[in-house]
Amino acid sequence: MKTKRIVICLVACAVSVFAQDDAALKLFNALDTSKTKTFVFSPYSAITAMQMAQLGADGNTRAELDAALGNAVPGAAAPGKIDIVAAVNAAFVHQNANLKNEFAKQLEETFGASAIPVNFNTPDSARNTINGWVAGKTRNMIKELLPAGSIDRLTRIVLVNAVYFKGEWRTKFNPNRTRPWEFISASAKKHTVQMMRVEASFDYAFTNGVQVLVMPYGNGGAMTVFLPSRYDLTPAFDLLPKASGINFKSELVNLAFPKFTIMSNHGLIPAFKELGIRDAFTASADFSKMFVNVDDIYISSIIQAAIIVVDEQGTVAAAATAVSGVWGAPPPPPKKIDFIADRPFLFTITAPDGTILFAGAFREP
Image 1 (cartoon, rainbow, N blue to C red):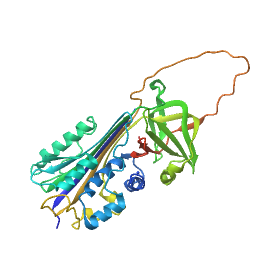
Image 2: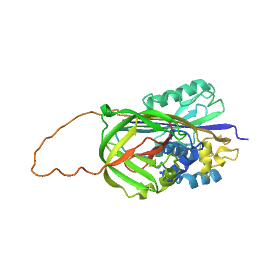
Image 3: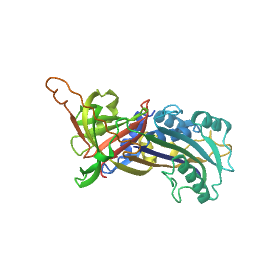
Image 4: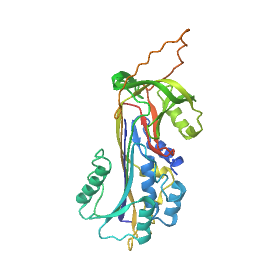
């Protein structure tokens, strides 16, 4: 029976002022088990950390990982600089265990993941070390990734991926226009949210009963919002795999979008099983490429903590008035499209190269 454990930890946070495509969307659907909750997760972080474990796998375990994730290279090794993007990896290894040279070399060369020795014989001390590293890499947005009891004396390696993202809207919201607004949740309850407002040109489409709006960030990347006509998000989930084929047009949009903060914690083993990865979590696991003289090892947990804050942060409010006179009748006002996010919606945050860094469902404030 396998006794030594791999713990995979994923931490992701975004401040907003898919191997990453198909696998990302499958993970998204697999996590949305209740169909009623608001949540956020990072497919980029999840897949990257699993690909680090993939480097140490062999036999059927490796075959399953290859089939689900593709080659053991990060889907977006450098997701692109938006305003602040930091994607960092590390391998916290039991101080008495020796990584095989090839595995350590590949971790470093492929993912920039250094091996950091810790003493898992004192689990609380090791947990504090890892949590402190994560807090530092995420500007203290996530301070306790590993809860008490998440690692123990049998743990031999904890693989961590941390993603921190901050982006300013290209089209800025004026905080003075933010007002209380009624939001009707998935359960038909009425809530009051702080709704940001702006009128500007955005890439927009309406297809299969879903409004789709692209809200770009200043230095690349974007948040794409999928807003169904009704409170059921099924049409939005159905549209996600086809998003690359949407025919967007630049339209003048009257946009109302809520300020929100979402904090989510996920155990991702069930979601990865939906991708066909099974051996890695059982006594049949083969991670023989990881350690010298340690063969009885399997993945015991995959933990992700994610947080996203969407507001006017970083916005500089300004006003400019131009008065000019011309002869003749004034032109008719341009047609505006209303995009009022006062009901459940899906969103993705993508890097400039299209990599899905974050995805989430907003159903209840």
